[in-house]
Length: 110
Image (cartoon, rainbow, N blue to C red; front, side, top):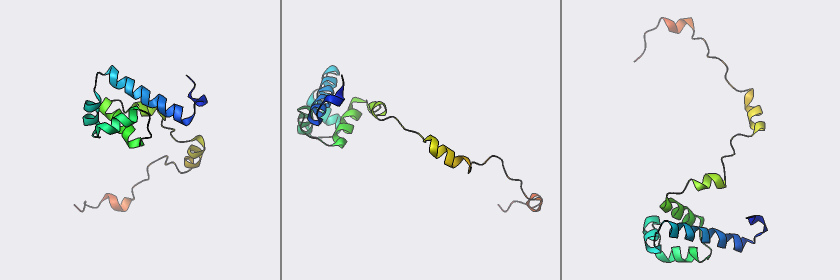
């Protein structure tokens, strides 16, 4: 399914329908999901009907499903860009410094 051809409202509806289907697949009622997610049952009903909701509600629902890791697939960690690696390359420490001979004979202060 190519979501790029969908309108924003259609994408929202698709996401909320998938969440609803996941809830049903897990055999969880809206009331039970609301308790697990720590939100009011009306919030779950509004979310599943496609009404605009907050990102926090979406996160709470995913956490209640035990499925928060799906966000990693949605937005993978970009890591450090190759350009940033090149900038840091010159500043990278390559060896340990020698301790001075003055400090070798002294007793520790602690």
